[in-house]
Image (cartoon, rainbow, N blue to C red; front, side, top):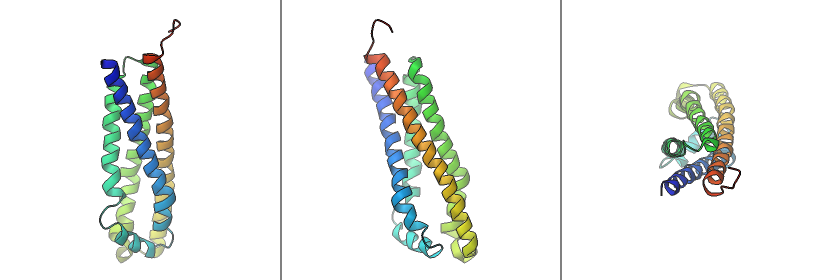
Length: 168
């Protein structure tokens, strides 16, 4: 029974990780080209479009879900040494992604979307957007790497728990 609960936990974290990856890729290739195409005018248009919900309403809860499911998966799968380190490494990528968001992205979001052209010049907003997008590619990389690591951790856990052979 414990093995099934642990497998469910590991799969849940993998699932949340993949949702996070798909979401950040959607932002990268569909949403951000519209937001950053004609600064500062595109910021005003984006704010009108995202009046009801925005990445800010979506990603923080999803990030917390990823951290929570990752911690649970790491705790439950701790005894499976081949999976443990992959899960922990995946978690470190999510923590790095979250830290990059909070430290670098959130202040730039405030500059671009809250203060905007009422406070800052168009050139400053363009520079801020460039900085935002550079850090965003690190976030994408953290998500891709974290997803690969978590998938590897899932496979290691599954192999250890369900595919035992005489050599294990």
